[in-house]
Length: 501
Image (cartoon, rainbow, N blue to C red):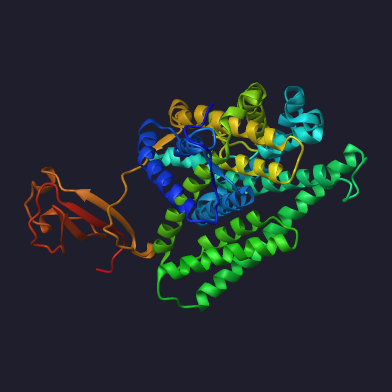
């Protein structure tokens, strides 16, 4: 395939990248509406847009791969931070055991089975690495993480929730297995590139496996420990400090999360795990000041991080190099989707009575691959692993296959298995923030039936504990009072809660 124009090497340190990304982001935002309409993950569209603009398309080439990997890592850091802040311990606690089993035992089963299968299909496609179990397990480790942003962008675009507490379970699994998969990838890369330096050259598989296990345990444990320390320290600081605006609290939380990441890395721990744990602790803090402002801030930058990360990874892809690895990628991808992931899910959930068989089937299907595996595959290229470029191409093909096959069918499969709960329309609060102890906000559109007893607000005879706090009529806002005459189509914002009168 010939480039449409001569290749343009983009140096990320110049203003060229800003022009390029602004054009790509603008186009991606416009086309994402089409994806939401037909249930196609926006992340898949972003990847494709990046590929079309890349070296084998319009000819745009990212010159600094190390900086690109750094930006991708920063993107996944922001995504995990936002996911942790949104994780409700009240909702997650009942499914915490199942979620953690999925992200540990389930991940281990998936890596083990996929690595063994890869030994039979990779062969010479990634050089000598494909002929060794270590290289095959490296590919399996890269592919072991799931992509929660893609899963929930599809479900939320269709305003769907899942029965049997599957939402918090999948969020917890994907948030905690990304750091684990990343640690396992880095450990295996280190062994493959520096076996002699760390004294493993010529060692038995048992010794190597034991080292991998102990190193992984230490990284996860240290990450969790640092996360707890920074998380509770952040709660103490937020209570003591008094900032004047929501954006300042947002920046404070972002800074503390990056601090957790850095501290964990200094002691040989998992930085992603540390910031995820810290974010959960901070996000479940009571009386958090400007909470709504902070949530909106992180929702916005998370979307931006996802979008830029997928575009950037798409720009790094070389579609013309992928036919050479298409067959092993297809076989490996189908194995993960239909065998490796289901085995990991069903075996890890054996100790639990719930969720049901159909829910476990859906969990298996929701194990989408996305930016995480592609980003982890870049480590094999930058670290000089033999066959690293081929590994990146294989992982990229599998991520595209997963987003296309699983991503477009998440909603139909959930409905087929009768696991969908249609969300209520979003409450129109006109930007108002109500403390939880005051009650819940609901909105109501006035109908002709509401006005049968009379046209005024007083004639509605609202039950005790329900108050109308705002009325919107044709774009204008009206402060309600008992004698206000209502009209069909008025939008009432209602506060439901106990009152003293």
